[in-house]
Image (cartoon, rainbow, N blue to C red; front, side, top):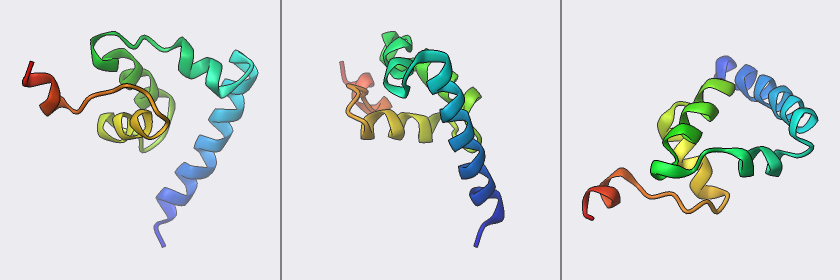
Length: 78
């Protein structure tokens, strides 16, 4: 399949373990993220920490774990 994606998955698992050591749990890390301004800083942090996790993937990830994040289109309707 896609070797780069497989390698990124393995490396990201290592990074999650590092985060768990640093924060006590991955949930603690998520809770520590700056969630103001529709998670813009959180998205930047996730994108920097993880391989192949750009802003769109980071946004989808946060949404998938139940964070109250809005799509950019929803923000512009306000």
